[in-house]
Length: 136
Image 1 (cartoon, rainbow, N blue to C red):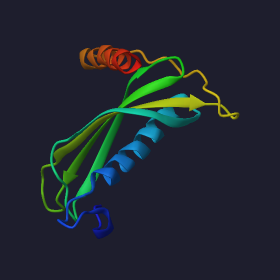
Image 2 (cartoon, helix red, strand yellow):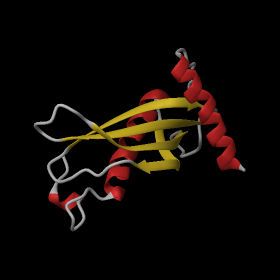
Image 3 (spheres, one colour):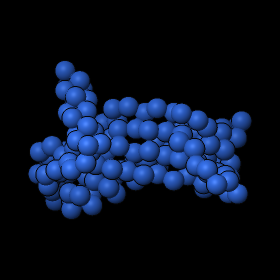
Image 4 (cartoon, helix red, strand yellow):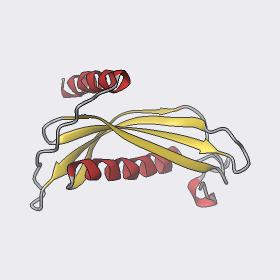
């Protein structure tokens, strides 16, 4: 729920607040997959599509697009919905990279992710391309 302390003087949800919520949702997704504590390594892309306002409900969907050796890319999508509206509006898409860490705070291996559907395979390939771009 977008509350008054989450908005700017125009009553619009602050981007940093939304990214914080998306980062938390992505951390939960990463930790569930890795079965370890995971930390944010990077945010590759954040695209604000539309504003959310006071009173809007925010729904965040996360999905691992690719698991590397110790890291995972997670796509987070956020929608807003007015309380009485039927339709949700996509307001943000972001790609987060998380690293799994062991009890000593060192990177640790994560389980493999095997894409099965056509869209999962495309996301898997694109995650590799985004990683190559960031590493260069």
